[in-house]
Amino acid sequence: MSHHHDSEFARQDPRLDISDTYLFRGTTGTVFVVNVNPLSGGGGFHDDESRYEIKVDTDGDAVEDITYRFTFQPPAADGSQRWELRRLDGPAARDRFADGPVLLTGATGEPVQTPDGLRAWAGAAGDPFWIEGTVVTAVKTAIAQGTAPDLTDFDPADATNLFAGTDVQAIVLEVPDEALGGAGAAIGFWGSTVLATDAGGWRQINRCANPLLNTLFDLEDAEQDIDFNATEPAEDQRRYGAEILRAAERASAAVGTVPDAAAHAARVRDLFLPDVLRYEVGSEAVFAVDRRNGRGLTDCVPEVMFELVLGAPVKLGLDASSATGVPSDVFPYLSVAGARH
Image (cartoon, rainbow, N blue to C red; front, side):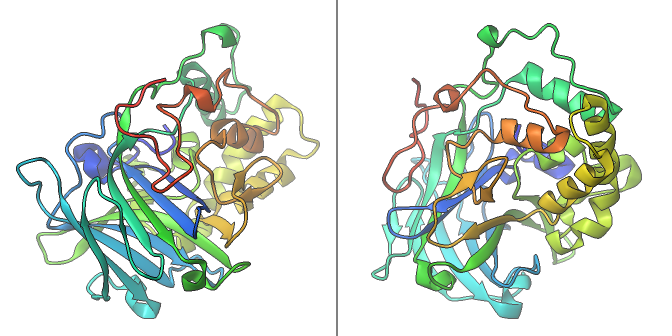
């Protein structure tokens, strides 16, 4: 439930629903992962009139300076799909009508690499995300109501992963560090899915960076005509800052472990808005309470998010061994589809 089914349009077509994004150091470069179609991984990727985009901000303004764009063809008889990867830079990175150079082409399930070390893979994989349903419901309810989480009836010994044994469709891109400014460069990343409109334009269906943000704060509100997934990170502070301030202040005050709930809430807002994963190229990724630098495949992000928002730890009773399969040390790093412990 990091980012599962949080948009009306994504619910209509799960192939465009981004469940999670990851950003970490691989064996040869910087790895971007965008997972879609949670809970099943079936049906492949949307084809023809859609785009899957990896957005990279290189100057800290929450506006993309590089876009890596994947497009997919309809499935072949064996279910595989051909794909194409393009890179767009500068103003073209923000122009969905622009065409950048083709860097790679391939088919799902098969890794492809250029001579300079750019690598890409797309296909079904085990979902590396894990969470306990009772706990996340209690935390989400507490944030919405301005109360402390009620876990009276929760027994950690009975904890189960909501997504155990489920697959996703994954896009994995490993980029040479030099293509991102070199080791030590500061970048930001988010993933987006886009669908062509009948009017000849493009509609952004989903965007995702920080885990659980939209789940915990419910920034998607059709009744108020708020479509978080259709907006851009640079707009986040203005659009959603007040709601996160209000919710985080009420909930952390109810928990009672922070000395100044208002100051705590302001820190929460500034940590997660704009909604971009920040990372130092070439460094070890970590998503923890005291440091956030990208996101690794085995980081326990729900517990980190709960503690950051509430100001107190909330345990799941689970760890990375509860996820589907075991991540690999080699490209494309995710566990195989249908993996079980």
